Image (cartoon, rainbow, N blue to C red; front, side, top):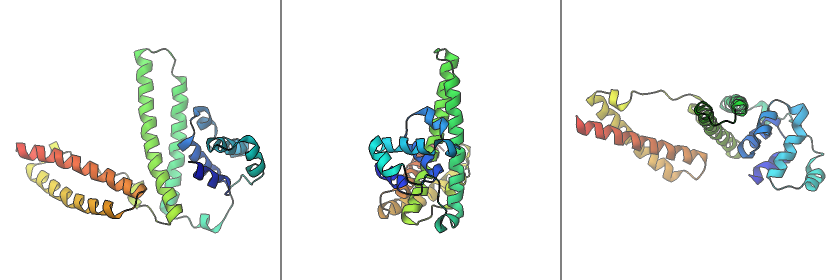
Length: 225
């Protein structure tokens, strides 16, 4: 966290990337509502709040960072941003706006612990959690690109096609599906062994876990046929 924030403070300070950082590491829900799309008003405030998260004192912030340019700087690399990264940034912006909206809705739920209020809070928290998980995946993919130059797969911004559930397949389809899964699972396990730790490996391991679960479900149904 500290290295990411200091790197941002020492850079041109793209405001939206700073907001991304605060959503990732910050804890104050009011700031998460306040910062998006208010660069002219809160650029300095955002920088200082991120500096505090990195353990930087007020005096150090004022001496080393406050006089730096806070607005994004145009450069060649930004004008040549790949399409998939642009789409990731666009979706991240949408997710942050939606998450801020849900946080506002959460603050509007009465404090009384009635069944209705508790259900509303639970639903909002679950939706916020899903949004945060998706935002983390996109953030890590974007950062991995800027650190290594490796583009994430286009599928990261495309919703996966939903296959039939195991209990909706014919017996023959289940056997075929399990065979295909076993084959692709073997390839994924080999990829996982060859891939260094990082977002890409985490994604492969998550895929392996999902495939193992589906194979188990298919096998149980096949054995019953």
